[in-house]
Length: 120
Image (cartoon, rainbow, N blue to C red; front, top):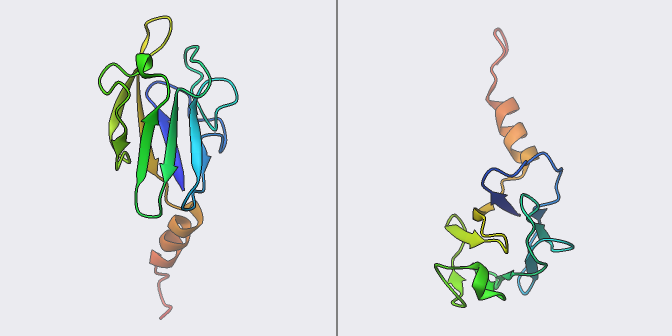
């Protein structure tokens, strides 16, 4: 599962920016109806794509004018890397694609780590 983190953007939007990925899948990043939504400031639809080949994720800019540091160059192994975006209104944003751990696995690990006195 992948999560798009946008600095200073409210993360309490449910699972809107969390997607389960499979090899060969491509997701869009941007405003509007993009798969990974940036809503902190107005951003056009589909400014970049994230694709997964079964081993790694690649971020490919579709609108290089919004990516001053990378232009139209793809970012291979983009998980965990901060990427700077400039909106049409010249606002600077930082995004990062993160691998999301399944919350049920984390909860299960926590519950199994608790030892009850008197029980073996």
